[in-house]
Length: 279
Image 1 (cartoon, one colour):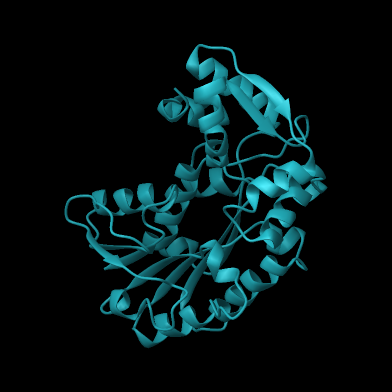
Image 2 (tube, rainbow, N blue to C red):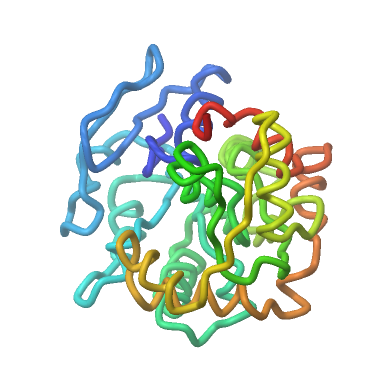
């Protein structure tokens, strides 16, 4: 049995489906009750609570671990989850980490994730660490403004990074959970090309068949908006990358294609598949 945390999210949902379609027994874990694919067990658990994941781990052979934003709060100890996995008899953990652990290691949120990575490496389990950069699905932040006003509002409109489709992250995670060849590897996951927010707006407009205007936000405006859905430190870390990506953060990694034996999906593909959110 494989446990998938964050199972209702943009990565967890396609990962759960892929594992079930591969014939695996899957336990989908989320903080709130939710529908699950046929044959998949769903459990509600709060990873921020001590021992919150233990019931789901009973009998599991593998765990996909995604840390939600509240795991970075003061007093949280997300690295303890690795010990829970060991105690529960789990043999393999695939951790969704962050590219920033390598490129900006001293940010508050990066330090927390690094501690989880270190605990996993020292656990004696088989492991794989996935370090994606920006997610294509972050464009859903613009869904309401596109639906109501045909506007994308974002900072740093002409600064791009090689964002990745969450469905590709899910496919890589499935491969790492199921295939021994990917054990004990750290994989940097990016999309196939650098793309700016303005270009993302153009791709959404193409998918809609309708013009979409780009409106530039200041950093402070963007920070205030992001702080409603994530810790302020994480918002600042994200804006640092979006505003001034390093050469490492601009690099298109070969790891996605190496694992999946195909090119990563471009943002235009994501926009076409998710166009209903913007109508």
